[in-house]
Length: 371
Ligand SMILES: [Zn+2]
Image (cartoon, rainbow, N blue to C red):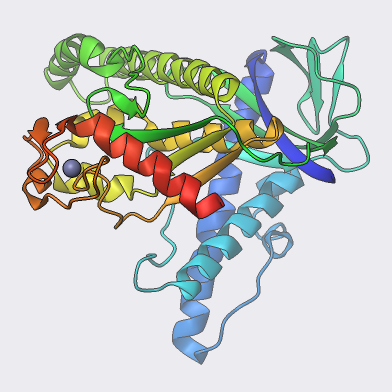
């Protein structure tokens, strides 16, 4: 089957001084337009009880500095605002009303779209040509195949002081016909080890954050003794952001490798459809849950499996995987207590490791659902 797919590639960029200034200005203008439009919509609604359809072009006469920056960045600010509104109207119970973007809180980035090839990679991928900015030096780590079409670019000034360009490519691909899976595996979520598989395997999961944590705590303490918004304070903030960034990158790398290994070994992966946010908030496991990125692993597995003709099965989150005895199906409610790591089945007497038993149940439930 021929399908369209998108892939985002992050490039590190090295803009010159003038380009840096223009990037900052564009980010500022996008934020300004977003806030201005939001304010006007709120005001208009208060007065007329009707919604206002405003566009960035209407502001260009009143604020001429908006003409100096990439107009697509402003259009995207409008799209972002529209999306914030529609998300709110769809589910007002859970999604808040659009908020104003604060200068030091909002993500410092802007997005621009490719129109008639105005954005392109040049000199064998050494430069990226962008509207208004011109040629920006970028670093490419792998060659992009020629059939990929450049759709948009998000320019970001990271908290650690670097510039990145995230390029979105579109391409057509043949996804292999899903074959009847042969090799099944169940993964039971574990906040300590990331997961335990039905073959009793755990990834060799390094807890990056914990390791860097002491280092971070020390640097945070230093920051708290500094004069806010002084030069030293800003320098220290950058240092902390760099530490966070390193943790994030190492973790992502590890998750990619783990997912690739699983995809190579199995063609059907069964996982629980857990609400990880709820887990991290309720069980005092916040730090390790946030740290280990099981949700990201699940997403990576889903698309990597699809690429290879495998599949992923999500088990209902209320399926009592850790309570059922895998050998006889007896439901042992004692195991609701998370501190029970091992147990003997009261009915058939088989000795169980809590996590492996749960993973086996998840695997078999997945098998049942798919057939
Ligand atoms: Zn049993």
